[in-house]
Image (cartoon, rainbow, N blue to C red; front, side, top):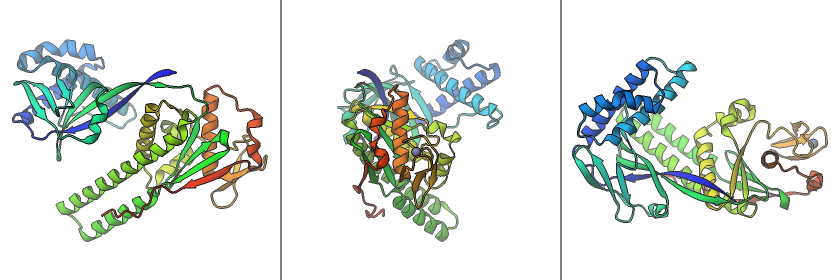
Length: 394
Ligand SMILES: [Zn+2]
């Protein structure tokens, strides 16, 4: 057993936008940009130093502003400046960063959230105000979670409070790791001790193709203008929502399979640059966004069930033989064969199998050779088709 923290950001949409909030966004943005200039000119990446050197003058200029806003602005600026410096080193940024967003960062002194009553109490330069938010059913789930930082964000769709919730969960010692191989149209799980591989057909490709065709149609009909932009955005959002909905259902299924074994292994996507196979996978319409999104959903759902999640290096997971470590070569459509031991399997099976093996190795477990009668085909693939793509996306 060990404790792990889960963090999730939840959006709360404000029912009405209080008077003066627009001015407040502007004031805060002004403070942030003042701080960026100061950090930039003096090369400051330390929150404490930035606060120390600017607090007095800002306090004087904004006497009505609760002082914690100055702290959060310093916090935002140190992270903005740090990431700017990183990008600059890589030659990806120049000049001085400018903050243009309508975002105000809050800490726990600046707001109180009442989930039951559906209100947010917010400290402002005009005193404490009460804001009502649109209730949603899933908000209930966060009743016993800890409230952390938050951001007030103005978007064309209204003003939102994005709150980070955290929860400590007990994660148990895994018996083994279910390797999860994500692909554009299927997810393959290796349930090694049982000799079974589960392949869940996701139909993600069909969903994406459907929206792709739709977008092309709009682009052909409407060459320019606001209508075109609006329609493209509308369908873009629908596609994202549809995919997120699918990812939640998919993640539930994956965690259901993994619960028995206590562990899940996913590919570490921060290492994708080194993997040829991954960049090829990423190039198509399957974006990084999808992979990361689905992984993050699997990760927190797993932890909530006490299932351990580990990330493994994805390089060559589908080109090395899981039985002998030899090199695999294509042998027909999606089938790979080992030139060393003769092992042959579907590439998704190989992928999820290797992911499992890497997680076990990371965990310090050596896989006994007798655990591999599987070489001679002592394993099977079970396909599931839980989801359909037939649901109209209109
Ligand atoms: Zn082999």
